[in-house]
Length: 545
Image 1 (cartoon, one colour):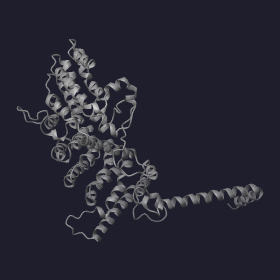
Image 2 (image 1 turned 180 degrees about the vertical axis):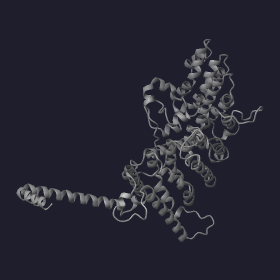
Image 3 (image 1 turned 90 degrees about the vertical axis):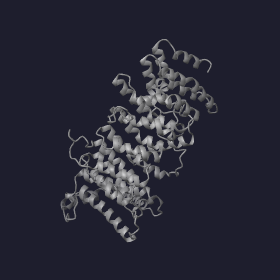
Image 4 (image 1 turned 45 degrees about the horizontal axis):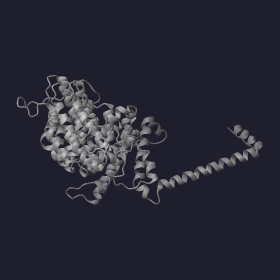
């Protein structure tokens, strides 16, 4: 307070523009460092000191006469605003694992999304460690979950990696949003940011420096930091400047007095927004997501031709629609399904210059991965009509990885077809009718797997019918479907059944194995004791053959 900050203020007014530019680039590090070096009881004093010292420096640099100083401060403006979020003593400190850094931070994954460049000082001082840091795995100490038995943990290890990754990402996002509600930022910090710096940040969406490349870069910086700024300011400050900024990033002509025609944003801007749309929706809550975010998703992202945008549209769609109420959620799932299985996407056989919407194999793989999350959100009839046709397409895909990831939706689908998930809005369906529909739907899935994957038909009978089955990869895929279904049963009622058939089968197998070993041991012992008789029997057997 008495030495470092006054010296930093003097450097921000240095006559050499490179020095002034460097102070702007270091503002984020200064803001974070001030929170790292104090106790939690002194946070209010430090917050006041940051507001009184660092924010005026930022304002001065944004109005500097040198364009390089201004542009440098614009680049780090979003991360500087995000630095006012209580990073150390709130959400990320709780959900992220401990590391060697003094602030307990992790510089990738969800930290990078909410706090871009937030710990760049530590990264520069320990670049090798930052380069090898893996994506954060959230700890669940603050989330109430049932204690897992060793058997469940053993079974979880057999699940594919994308299941664990998706679960960790979902938990991280929900934990950050929950902590934002529980431990909000300092209201004075929020007011200071909104009063002095928010206009500068939202102005990046329509900045006009005279250089198109520089303008495009500034819009990318704004889009990249946008989720972090929304997290700081919260849903209560969405209406107005934050909302207009988001729409301006998507359409640079939004609110323009000269032209109302929509203009496509720079591609990196749209990619940033596509990757963070579900994050912004969760921060803002279900009401704002339904009214403002979902129409943007439908109009700007659902049918986009860019591969990166489409990949994020597919990958994050279950997380996005999970916020909505069932009727509205079903509407958007129907639109998503119609787009995915349309003649221009999965329905087309081949990609061409005239049809760029056809999904590549990686995008089709993410369709396979997100199907289980979508199936559990809907009722049985909806899943049968909308998601089962897509599942059939990806189960017959030409790429093995797409097929292998798709099989994990089969047990979820069969579970969804149970009578409990059959909604009868009119209340006219009887218990018997539901039972017949459930049995028929499950049987259709089983018959389709046999006829399409195994290539078995009802007419394949008699000797040699096994040779008509599918090729090796198809038979292997069918076995993997059975494995996934059995694993789902084990996760369900099987673990609670005192007469667990799997445990009984395992016991019988071990008993049979021990019996076989004992018989083999007795045979070897008898052979060693009667070698002449063994040779005679072997010779007789050879003559008989």
